[in-house]
Image 1 (spheres, rainbow, N blue to C red):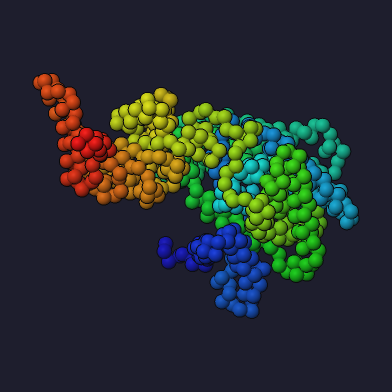
Image 2: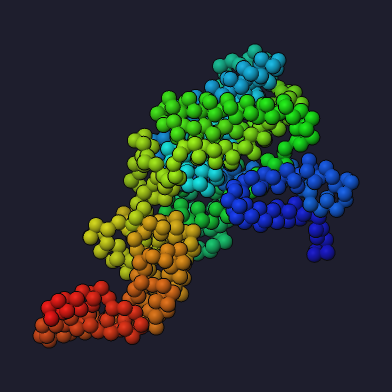
Length: 606
């Protein structure tokens, strides 16, 4: 079968992977958003870039993407995975708390921008159906570009970031009604606009309800069953099934796939699997989003831009000016300060990916003339190219450093469910809590002692049954592999005051200690060791303290027998501590805190 492989069949894939391998490191070195690199690469590798020269220079065809339409099908999954990840970082409680921004600010932004843009289209002589379709398409901004920019600049949890996300979320919800309305308009019959036409929205509502009910009933049991199989490949497959399957159910109901994936993410955010799912899905999201940006660049019709430059550039500038003005005014009305309002306005100034979907349908149904539609799409693409630059301008105009803002009362997270999301995308209980890896007998005792002393802690374990039992008892536990850096960071390692490793697998414990020390050189790491030799390896890997089971068991037995035969308790405890310090010295480690305290007391007494 190998002889039948045609290298040309894989050319587009190789070009994309090569672009990702070159663009991301290069643009990060230049301190520019990789999004710009992907967009530019799309223009260069597309039929309007090097492809237009391949007829004269034959070898350039090897550097040209041949099947943009096929590539675009996979590229759309980038938006689906992005919305799924956004859902994972939220909770139903937090989303409910944001409803004022989502259904207030978001609804007004779509309504006002649609009306003004459609009015401008009417003024230039377009018929009403075409004007409405263009207004609807250009009223929606780009979730796929804006949200990665916010995450990259750590702005998604500022007040401007939350307002921006709320508007983007409503825009995604508005896509289905817009597409249904365009279908009804294309019929051009009186009954198309009768009250019975509203029944066309019922499948979308039923689809959302089905997603919610099925997700509540089956998502957690399915992942729990997969996790018990202890197969990483199977767990990744289950994660991909959840994302793509929920998107397809949503698409069958007439909604966008992204909305279905978002709902699935929200449901999983309340479970113990959220961090493991995040870490498994993140690479797919990054690659598919890069593919999406390349497809946007490929869609830039350069010949049409050169043929009608002033019309297209003028339309793009007018669109960005209109969106900026509308969002700024509405944000001020909703209580945002001027600096936050201008940040949100500039982030939402450009058009979005759904402009291609809406205008594509409108042109297919005959609502918008093809030349007009293509011209508007090129203007929309130009505005999307400008979003990373506008984001930088907004950041500078805000006049402050990038740091999370205090959440307003309506956006505060009130989730008290163990898996509820906090303001920083991690569970609310994870910030500043001790991280305990392993929740067997030793881990449970450590957690109990921390609780008794009023110390917040979060646990992690790779055994789904252990996690399930712990959560039933009220412990804050998450399923996942703690030897992976991304999982540890999602569990709050960046702010954790200490890490306690209680795993009974020596190699697994060493892996966790090594990864954690690499991520946090200043972190206090206390690890359970099998014996003195294992403790030495843990110390070498960066453990602050290692507690050998054999040594501690011997010392406790000695303490018990000495006290029972009448040796004074004080002398026994002092000798036990001294013997423990001798073991530490033998392992070339400093004496314990208790030993240092006793030495200080002896020196003071002398």
